[in-house]
Image (tube, rainbow, N blue to C red; front, side):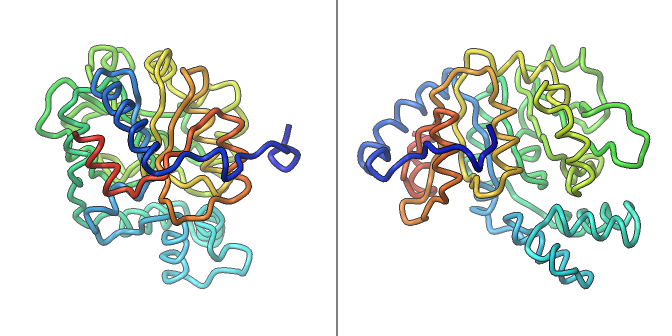
Length: 293
């Protein structure tokens, strides 16, 4: 059923009070420390370190708009903006723009450093910066898998693995890593992989429902685990699609931290209801304090 036809949506009465949400988050944080919960990070997490990078898809679209004159249909939409640049110029220009946008020094905020110290089996980070990789740098026994573009470059794979030093690795190597960092949309480091244009996502979305673009090791490590979405919004269909597919066949209910004063869209409310995601209205800074104990 399409999202447009989904009738069920969370009402205000379905959402916990902040006091109730804080108690639930405390319980979820305890399970996180035990490796039972997978953190799924959005750009609002790295925003806490105030880096000089775009901090939302809308910010990224604005960045593209400052680099080139965009048609009306592409303004405000990062995926369409990147597609326009790719079509008018070259894929190399898209890569250059993304590297410029995310190449600034990006220090990991305390939450990322804390998550790195837990040696979790899986951390999902959905933005293009390398702050989580930097947070893991002082730890041992970890590696990374990133989504990659297949549009126009003859790539036969959906993803690539990298060890802690940034060298390309094999899927078999990842089986030995205690912690796996998953960057489903790619990352500026170590190899400038970016899933960003409409063409990139057309490739992925043709098969994402049958899970081909999701690495088997991710499918394995999410089994019997719950997801905690931190610093994420789901007001865009692409963001909802990825969250749905990455968390597929795991162990709901899942949880998402939302700012108490942010109005959820109807599609977000429907998404939470459909995917058994419990919104926790706790300010992000306070939520991080609870998670870190």
